[in-house]
Image (cartoon, rainbow, N blue to C red):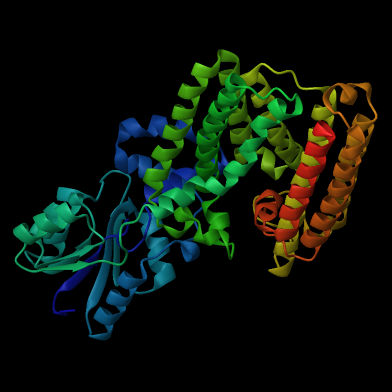
Length: 476
């Protein structure tokens, strides 16, 4: 580091000091609090970008203490100040947001942001800095091509994680340039944002085919196509949910490592990814059938309603989660034109209600261990744990009861050569549900019982035994 502390160190905010963009941060914060804000944001846009930023800044609630800061930049500024230099934060982000961040960090001598009329970016920022600090009177730290007019007027250019083309232009444009690189570009955070492990849930689209014992080439292909469509749209939904839950995720010890919360994937990219994935899934769904497309649109609308509002309503939230699981089975039915029986529907509703309650139980146990008596974004209190546990057990046991009644029904005789073997399935399910509730009660289940089951050795053995009983009942 070459410090000439006679100059002012000017630091950009979005993408430089922060691993995020406050325009998108404010939009998603405002949207998660009130989905109608999108209409007021659209009406503010014709008045200019600065006006839009001010509007969103007033509507949003962003906690500066949990934002993803670039530690390398913070260390650079600290060293600069220790050497006797002065630092100023100059950003196109709205002034009130920039001031809140500066107040939290306490490392800037001045703060200048957009004021609702002037968008302090590019050539406008360059002119402002030259007027305030004189020609070549400052060092400038930025990250994108929009900063090129500023670097052109700076004594020294400092880039932060800038693209290769931008760094090349800076080297040509500026006599003195320093390039800081904190992270290597990687596709892994993008893949992580898709949550491919959650695609396990989408295997439910194969259930109608398997339950009806209708396993032929056409049915298998239809189920695979339905799985692909569901995975695309579900990943779009997971990204949307992460964007809506940014503040809550950053306050969580594990969820703060999610790509958007940690800033390893730009929120702007996430916004584009969410729309693209849903669009692709819907496009492919149309080739299966228009009825399947309607089911996928319904799934997306329900999940969006859940993310924006329904997840905050007690009981309704776990009922919605159960419904979203069950929709996957219904989607498989529509894709393959196989009717689902009332037995399968009843079992699914109660079994998935149990899983949803176990998920909430695990979250509440985790909140209690962290001393958070009322989890953010939820309608529950830690004191509700006994009731949630009872719902998990009761709904799970009722699902097993439905299974036992099915085993003794006339319909099972048509599908299974030895239906008595299905009693073994009932016994294993009873054990697994009880054990899952106990594991959650002990605080050993992290958020999602489906993902836990996929990694848990005991659950895997239970799945193999259930498969053995099912195959035995069909073939013996």
